[in-house]
Length: 70
Image (cartoon, rainbow, N blue to C red; front, side, top):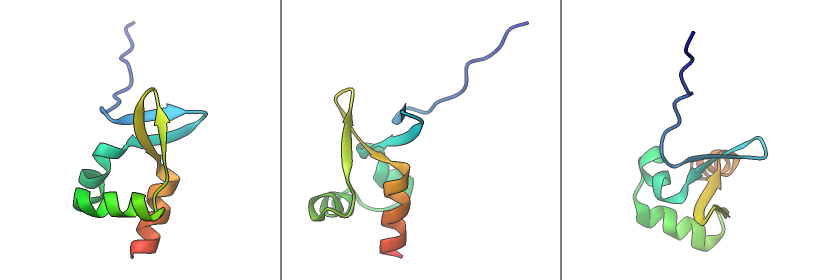
């Protein structure tokens, strides 16, 4: 019996049982402009981390930003 590998979309990361999204994918995931995300990162509203050389944002951070924005 063959098993298929789970489908993981590009830009998604898992580290220490936490899920991350590449910073470059955040605007399309939230349907906002990249300029808005850049301003939020500069203002400290979204905190990014480096994972294997890629800037990524924890999903908890994105949910917190959505609450602040809403």
